[in-house]
Amino acid sequence: MANIRRKDFCDQSVNFLIAAIPVIGFVLFGLIPMGISLLVSFTSVKQSFITEKIVLIGFKNYGRLFQDRLFWKSFGNTLLYTLNVPFSLGFGLIVAYLVNSASKGQKFFRFVFFIPYVCSTAAIALSWKIMYNYEYGIFNAVLNDLDLKAVGWITNPNVFMFSTMLMTIWASSGICIILYQAALANINPSYLEAAQIDGAGEITVFFRIVFPAISPTTFYLLTMKLIGSLQVMAETQMLSGDSTSLNWADSTVVNYLYRMGFIDPIYYGQSIASAAGWILSIIIILITWLNFRLGKKWVNYDMA
Image 1 (tube, rainbow, N blue to C red):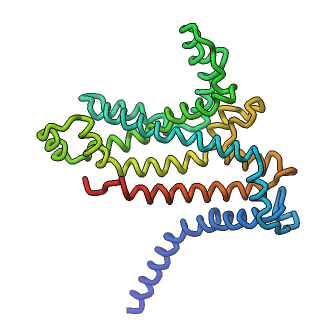
Image 2 (spheres, rainbow, N blue to C red; image 1 turned 180 degrees about the vertical axis):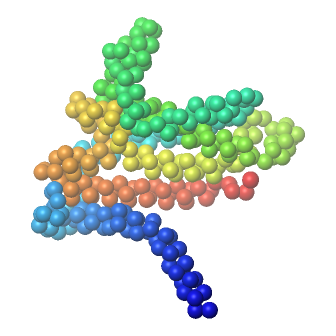
Image 3 (cartoon, one colour; image 1 turned 30 degrees about the horizontal axis):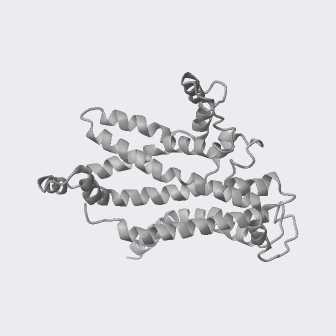
């Protein structure tokens, strides 16, 4: 009996340790760095909180950010970039509907559309950077064939963020297509048959049956893509190559805090960068909370 109890205790201990590994990882690489960054955001630390003397200065870093024109420009660029989300969802839904309607080749088209999503951001950005090239890019080549003026897709500050959004829509729609295909395939056919018998048109069927049925998928994609878009950095940085001619048109909030914390730490420093990071975190939390609150009014889980 004692041996059985000892064996059960050992098994439970091993199971507990295995289950605790993700928690330990989160504490070491998530919770502790978050706490340190929160502390640093209230200090005057420039380059390192380990070697420098920590002086608490209260909310001065946050006040300085609210008065910084570059921070607000980066914040505006970030909000503009998030407009790619509804376009990605809309494009993904249309393509998913067309692929599901195809009698043959569904697996092939699903594979083709999903490839960009699994490619690295660097590879995608470099490919699109070539296509956006002012001299020999395919976009300007088409414009030249149409006798239209060439566009500085990634050199014109007024166009840069829209070019980044177009690349993102192409690259990130694959996951939308896959999930929407699954959602469309799982719609109860009896609902559609009943609507057809009642003489409902396609628009009515979409808004009354199809959209409510796929609303959980839409809610998930909307939430995850909004969070990801608010944290964008690599896409803009790879396309611009840290060009100074764009006048910060390529800067997002994450780009901003990276530049302040590591590129120009003497004047700004890690305390300013930490404060910017926490402002972005609070904004993401608020938007996610609002999305969940509003989701209760339009997300339908009863049409499986």
